[in-house]
Image (tube, rainbow, N blue to C red; front, side, top):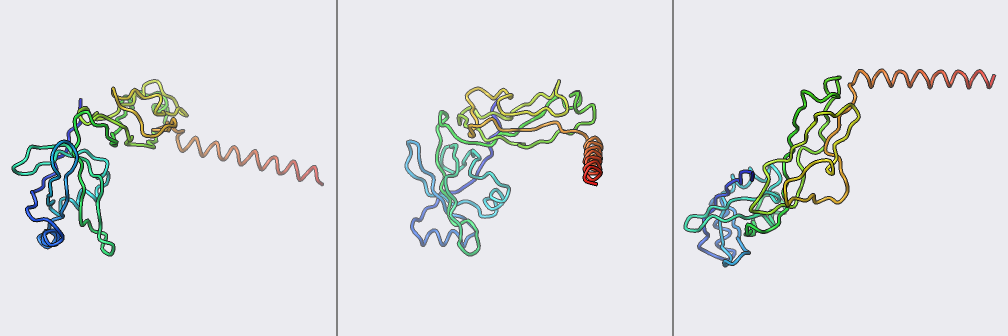
Length: 215
């Protein structure tokens, strides 16, 4: 099942050139351009506040959007560039690229963990440590997975979940070649402390034995 694609609202920009772009910024808008596909480039204006909020939330360049422009059909787009003011670091122009349903795109897909309550390692007091709550995958624009699921049933303390042990959605592949870690079940903090104290005691005994030998 494909995940919900967020809407990105914009309006067509009638003027072109630097003058029209400056006027748009004075009006609280950020000029941009939509290109690619079989249609002509479309100059647009995006509401500054909405764009700034999305930029602050992160992943803007790796999020697929449903672009809505009055008078035009909705189209799926992905950001290819955000130009910023060199002093204020605020967005001044946005480049959006149209995508066909068959286009491949890099997106961050959330990871969901199942059966945490029955995992043997967690029932013994182990802690699920999530290294990657999201995984960047190459997916098809027309079939974006909503999430990746990881089944924790049967996992014990010390077990590690890597990308190779997870069943990925059909047609999706990781952007990283190596077998990276998604999560692990670590030992309870009390057990770690006991092991550390035990280790410190062994080291102290070894030091005492060494000192006795030297004497």
